[in-house]
View 1: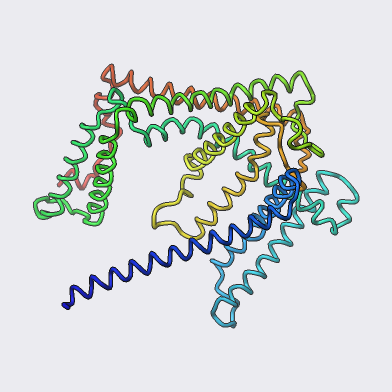
View 2: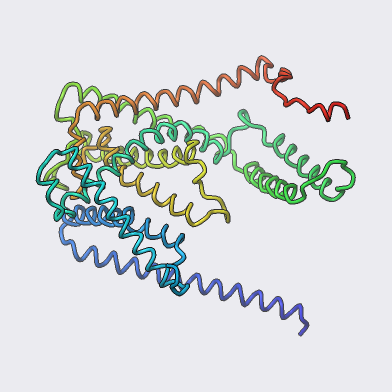
Length: 431
């Protein structure tokens, strides 16, 4: 056999071993998850015990991940070991543990001082033994409160961005976009860049070849996506996009309507306050006024708001830099994404309960929030959410109409003002 045949066989063997390795890892992961699910199902006998117990475990491990594991991961990536110690994993672990203990003492002291100032309770100032019963839930409530404020900013922005994101993923009708023109422009730009790369001496400017190669790859990817969208069926093109936009509009309008009704209930009935339920009878009484249909609507709305909050979080200018990039994401950036998603997920039950989307909160032992009984905070939160969501939606739709009007009147073809361009230096002018 020739050398080329041996190289082909070695590549095939490598691909085969990689495939076998992936199958083994997937099997082990599935078996581990199956064993954990079996232990959880056999440990909790009744459905009510299973739901509440599993939710308490979720809150427990979210506390551990957010307060201990994420800081440990960050300090471990940044640590190098103590001075004079051996370089290795063990030295980094020692330094990480010491840093984590110091951080725990600092956070515990801050929580103790904050609880003593807010509660003004002598017992809370003198006792440090009720860490599990008081300080950890108090710290978690503070983190969830910050997450609820973050959801207040990100969710309205995400609700407005969902329309544009869905429009990019789905194929629009031919009345709204011309795929043939986009394909022609993409092929023309790709040919122009390829000609520049092949003949760099024909242009008197200095060309960055690496940048040109990246632009060509981006144009090729865009052209492949446009080809796939052009090959879409007529049903997908003419029916999928309008139905998706209609569903988004209905879900968004229903969310705003429920929040508006909850605001009126807060003004009329004191029972609408989102206080935690005690000894809820799961499976016996429906938590929705519409029965099972209302419960399904609540679940769909909560999932829709969850997805919208994530979209709004990564679309906001403040957190846009945290967005993961393919093969270009540092470990600290991954840890930051995990922390932000943990904060958002921990605040989602409180967020849904505060807006009146559901009366079923399941806050558990770590969900005793005193601020949920404050009428002014809850009322202002609901009013701010309804106002911001309406403002973002109106701005999104009016921006599209404004762009179409500018294009219709030909204002987009007006010449730019000369003052907007940077002035050339005197040396360049003399030359």
